[in-house]
Length: 186
Image (cartoon, rainbow, N blue to C red; front, top):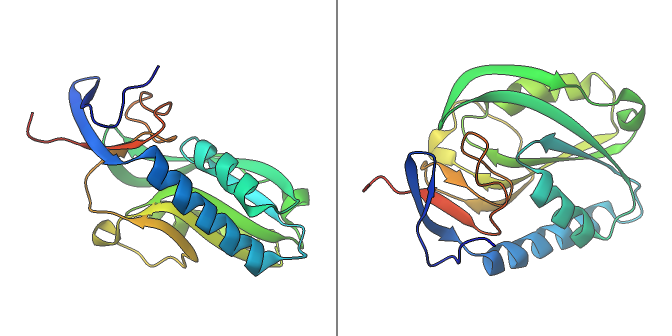
C-alpha cells in the first residue's frame, strides 16, 4: 500500500513531500485525453511511450483519449541519481513499421533540460511519421536548456526533483499514485 499524499516519504537517502495528488493527476490526464481526442479525431495514431517514466501516465492518457491506435515503447537514458547528465543514450529504438506514415502521439513523463527530446525527435522524424504531437505530463521551463516543440503539457512545475506516478529516484517511487517533490529541508 502506498503512502497517503499527506505523508512525507523516504526513498534511499532522500525525503520527498506531497506535490500533486492522485485526484489532480486524474483530472488533468482526462483533460489531456480529451484534447488529444479532439485534435486527432478519426485518426489511427501510434502512441510512442518514453520508458520507463511515462508508462503510468501513458496508460491513463491512452484510455482517456478514447483513440484507437497502436502503442510502441522507446527507451532513452539521461539521468544519474537526481540530475540529468546531458548525454542521451537510445536504449530501445522506435519500431519503424508502426511509425511510418502515422500520426504519432509521443508521450513523455517530464521535460526539464529538453536534451532528451532534442536528441530523440530527429530520430523519430527520420521514420517519416505523418505528424508528431508531443505530450508531457510535467514541464520544468526554468530548467529547459534547449527548445523542443511541446504540444500538450499536464503541469508546469519548479525545478525540484519529483517522483511517483511512474517517475523514480534510482528505481524507487514509480508505484506511488501521486507525485512527490524532493524535500531539501532534511
